[in-house]
Length: 178
Ligand SMILES: [Zn+2]
Image (cartoon, rainbow, N blue to C red; front, side, top):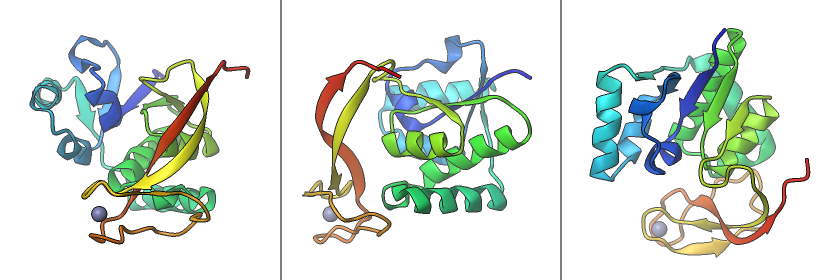
């Protein structure tokens, strides 16, 4: 069976033009809402109209499995509903016997994918592994806090109550030695 590529918003924002790639590309409808840049948005909407990118709807069962895996790994703290759906869609393809690659720059998505033996590829960091320290930031008011001892807990912004997301704040680049 042919390889299925699943794209999240980070892959689409980082300039990937789905209209010039000859592959089976999928995403979930929620990704479109995450793209604010109007040029990227137009490109994606065109690709959907041309059926270059197809929209998948993961089942409740797949979503449930992903939530459980993300709870175990602690990534549930930072995964958005869109991230969960991306992962669930990938899991469904995999369970049907497809080879799947998730294209994402989100470390938590990569982490959960790897626990479920789903291949993922980063866009901006392709081929490079780095040691990452994390902080939590509020996507709404941008306040950030150091991330420690937060594993498995849902963290909300003290100022505005929005669910916080994780991001790296210190990158030490390192050659991949795996
Ligand atoms: Zn906030």
